[in-house]
Length: 377
Ligand SMILES: CC(=O)SCCNC(=O)CCNC(=O)[C@H](O)C(C)(C)COP(=O)(O)OP(=O)(O)OC[C@H]1O[C@@H](n2cnc3c(N)ncnc32)[C@H](O)[C@@H]1OP(=O)(O)O
Ligand SMILES: O=C(O)CCC(=O)C(=O)O
Image (cartoon, rainbow, N blue to C red; front, side, top):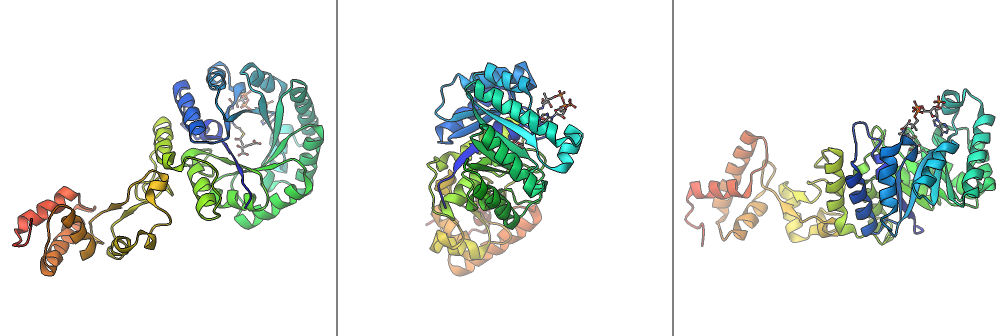
């Protein structure tokens, strides 16, 4: 797999998640964090939204970050003027490309939409801007029409074309085929933008990259419209660990970044969320805990420290003797096999009663209550 460029859109598509509002300070903090950990490109917002958003984009633009910054625009000249007013040197211009979208937004008049795109690219290029074009709803567009739009965008001066699975309807196989067509036809790089409506945003992003996309859109914790986008932490770690390509991202800070974005968005990250969910390196099941105690590779795809976690062994309904005795030994308590089994029985009972795993303190209390002769050597 080729080295791919991450263009993170937490500050644009991420914030579009219904109910999410970042303050200016939060936007700045997220931009700085993404930049610090090595994300090379950030889509920072939509200047056309008005003064408040423009202030935040200007503030980010004034930070002097290493990352390239990009503002999102419709094919509307005043949108691009607003981007210029925010100090943007790079603009992304979106144009609907599917029949459904062109009908809703341009009354089916595709020639009008193409003329708008041409005018906007020319205007932006004349302003000295670097221009990327996004084919909104590329996945449902007629393939020949999509190709024509992309080729025209290239001819008119765009430096990159974004393939958007706007409503997340593709699977990795179809994504691969569609992106490959574009990559083969264009000389400018192709970017993939995927949504998670069927839970395939990350898989589709990887398929697009495999097909030759040079750039991929992500958002932290997968925040974004409806079911969200391809998650930054998933894409980065999959590329690193499945394909062996290190993208130069400081991955031990991914957890802290996810917590920053979760707090700013008011979102609860599910415990089972890939890479940054709190259960991703927690082991309760007896067979798993036993395996992990022998060799963590038995039940972990990579070391927890690589993404900012520490491994946790938890005792509860599904535990076995090995994890119970391991935890107790860490507290200087050494039991014989019969005693360990009776603690395990008590752990199971308590866990079922409480409908959760036990804390270390609860486990130690159980042992105390049983007053084992071998306890606390
Ligand atoms: C797939 C995506 O995520 S696209 C990005 C979506 N993000 C957002 O919408 C968040 C920010 N949006 C906003 O703040 C507002 O929608 C604004 C400022 C952009 C526009 O607001 P309004 O002028 O009030 O229009 P409204 O949002 O109701 O309707 C969208 C208008 O943009 C037009 N439009 C939509 N996409 C495009 C496009 N790519 N190029 C040109 N025009 C477009 C629509 O046809 C409609 O035009 P109309 O007013 O002439 O009918
Ligand atoms: O950039 C574009 O063209 C649209 C991006 C987007 O958010 C989408 O299609 O879901």
